[in-house]
Image 1 (cartoon, rainbow, N blue to C red):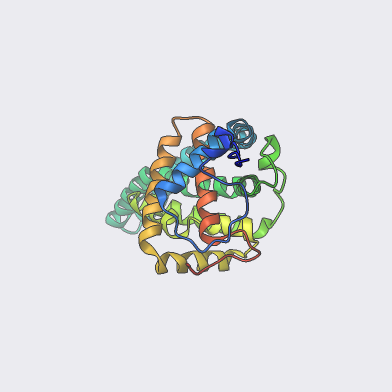
Image 2: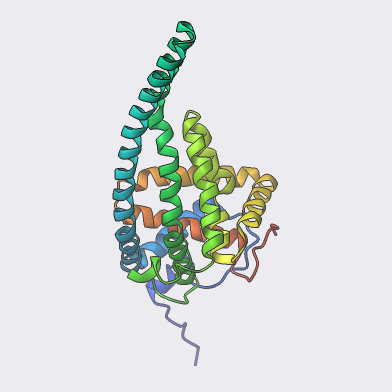
Length: 276
């Protein structure tokens, strides 16, 4: 009797992804990476939304608190700098009217730019406060993509204390560079995710210290600039679009970033820093 072909379920035959550990050392094709992430994301949309909701419950209170802090700093900073400049100018006028007038003018000009300067420390503080929760979410997404544990509401909390110091230090570096870049006509801020966009994931997933993760990320970018530049620009564009899709959009960007990191640096005990 001839052997009959084994029937394969349509859903299994059409899957464009696999749940499991990967070796790393790749520079994955971005189109295939996007399609693979999208297929897996849609098949597990419920768990991804639950994980995003958990992060949302943290991000909203932190965001509201930081907006209040920002307005307080902006108001007091603006009037404080202005009054300080006028007061110092009034004192200096006793010595030189020209010098006093210049100091008053500088105080007024500085007061105009002080609200922008207030944004930098608030941005850095926000990034630092959210960093442990984002790292926990990244670990949970990676475990989900390896098929170890399905995502749930606790994804942003389950490992929040793990590698806490390194996670915070990387966030401090990233937040500071982005803040300074925003003050330099915005464009330099966009270079930060292109150059050290994987450092936080390296700390979260491979338990690498802050300095080493930043150094290794920069080294990998310098060795493979074309791939990192292309991925970084795609990531920035998707992040902008994600804002129009609450929960789902931001979570898809996280899923894509984690999958890209795993394909490049692997799931082993140490990150793979060579390609092929």
